[in-house]
Image 1 (cartoon, rainbow, N blue to C red):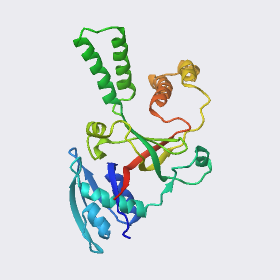
Image 2: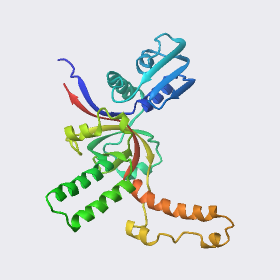
Image 3: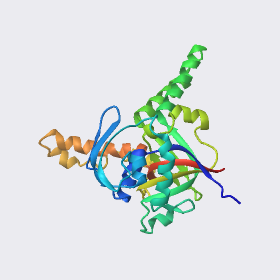
Image 4: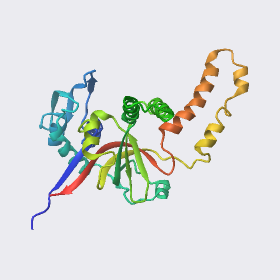
Length: 286
């Protein structure tokens, strides 16, 4: 009986991160790399490498040698290499499977820098959400249905754009209901965000898998979001401000206090886990 083949439907793949990981694991050495505004990578150097590095970095297959390469990245980047590089990453990088792990297990002190998690998957494009809300107001106005609710929707759209400007995020919920959340760079999506939402929706069906790096394990917060707003300004050092001889100490105190507000909207809270997504895909047997 022939062995079943595995097809991976890849929707997100951070090529630069994967390059860095595989180059270090395979002991490659890039002596210089320049990035231009049009996302063109150029590099020169000497290294020891094998077939993997030839395919991924476009280097010679010989054991030792010099190289020079140019690679244009973006939506038209070499997608054919993504599948091969992902397979190599999964086989080479020590990954802890946290699909069934409970939150308490992450406090054991065991290192889980790079992990793999499967579960329910969601895509969040906050700027697109704000634009959609604004379109509802425009449509209502065309039919003469402008009202106070539309004004509230407009205010909500403005709030989203202010609090989550430029943020696109990925979320996978494991079997223990722990959310693994991470902001992504849209240039590493295999398709545009609009195309992905059109094809799969905001919460694609089925079980998806994410390879990621844990970046933050939030602790339990003693304050609710409402309490945090009520206590805003309490930690400002009024004594330091009164003795300040320049504007800098005053501004620093104010900025530090407002940074707490930013954290409320931009960070991940307990029991969820903040990650840096590396690859997101769905496996199917053929």
